Structure formats: C-alpha cells, structure tokens
Length: 314
Figure (tube, rainbow, N blue to C red):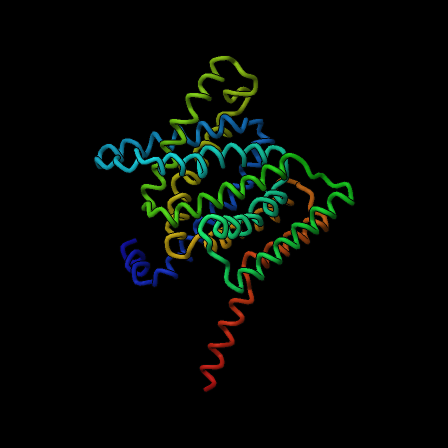
C-alpha cells in the first residue's frame, strides 16, 4: 500500500486527476444500476436519501469534531453546496430513476452535464468554451434534439423522469462549478455536502414518517436489500465518490472532469440490458453513441497523437 501511494504521489496532477476520475466512474456506473434496482426492490427514493445523508453525516461529524475544524461549515457557501450537490440533486435523481430506465439517465442526465456546465460557466463566469469543447457541445445538442424528436415520433416513452434528469444535470453542473471556483478542499466539500444535507433533509423526512405518509419507512423491504443500498449510497456515493470527484475537479477542471465522469453511466446503461432486463432500442443506441463521442472528445487525442508522431519523425 505504501509503495502504491509513493507511485501515485510521483504522478503529475493531471495523471492523478485521471485516477480519481476512474474511481469516480466506478462508483457512478454502479450508482445508476443500484438506483434503478430501488424500483424493483420496492425502496422509496425518500428512504434511501435519508439513509444516504444520515449515515454519511453520522460517520463524518465525529471526525470533524475531533479534528476541531468546523468553521467552514458555517459559511453560506457550505449550505449552498449541500442544496445543489446533496438534497437537490439526490431528491431529483432518485425520483427520476424510479420513473425512467438507466439508459434514459445516461443520455438525459449525464449527456446534459457538459452542456449545462458550459452554459452556466458562460452565464455566470463569462467563460467561453474552447474550440474542441464547442464541437463536443454541438454534437451533444444535436444528439439530444434528434433523440427527443425520434422518441416523440415513434411514440417512445418520454416523461417526467426524463425532465427530472435534465434538471439534475443543471443541478450537478452548478455544483461542479462551485467546487472549482469556491476553493473548498475536497474534505470540506464532502463534509459540507453530507452534514448540511442531513440537517436540511432529515427533519422533514422525520415529520413525514411520523405522520405516516405512505411508502416511507422501508415497509416490506428485505433487510439485505436495505443494507446493500444504504451502505453503497451513504459510504461509497456520498463519501468516497464525493471526495474523488472533488479531487478530480481540482486537478482537471469542472468541464473536463464532469464530462469524463459522465461516461460511466453509458457503460452501466449497456449493462442494464442483460442485468436488469431493460430495453435498448435504436433511438437510445443513437443517443449513447452521440453522447459518448461528445463526452470523450476523441479528436482531442487524435490531435495530440499526430503532434507526437510528427515530432518523433523529425
């Protein structure tokens, strides 16, 4: 383990960013599948959100108190991070996955994140995308437009879940920009998102549970399913992936990190066909290809490869 840590420290910041993105992709790819399984296992989105925030905050708060480093929690920015990257995003995304298949999330959520990020950076920070990014955005927008039109023409399902995915993308894009611009450390981001999300969400959830609102309280859910979902969404998603994504944004930037991490759900969308029995039609395949090209931006690497080959031939 020490040897691996030494090797990692010797990597350039950019290379470290790619490592963190791969780790984030592993969790995010699994997230799409497990979030969709909630529908099959009969787990309410509101229950899993309560576990996600409650467990993660319960693990982080004692460490934070022990370290006597809580001043950053009282900044308004810490609360805003939780509203966008915690309560807001989680409430939308879990609800969306209960209403729409994984492949819809891959396209309308993760495909929209680079577009939403670029638009928000232009509107809020007056930062224009570079040439390669413009090509990617045009490709993604054309793909989304064609997909939506084809879905409506062919009478395929396009509903509330898809709209929620688009709103989720805007929410997460804003969160990514805040991570980059506000200068919070990854540790502070993780604690702010988890703890303030728990403070804001759990009292409301507790009142609804007390009032006996239907569908809450893991009623009829097997213990093993509840443990699997609770452990994954609280520890792996809320703590581990929040940390790795923050570190990746710190090293690669909000647009590039968000775009690469968004590739993971495309893989999970393909896995959902054999694992969850979800349909995959030609329209969604078109969307996956278009979004994948726009996210990875292969022409960037072709240009770098040509330059290297040209230099070596000289």
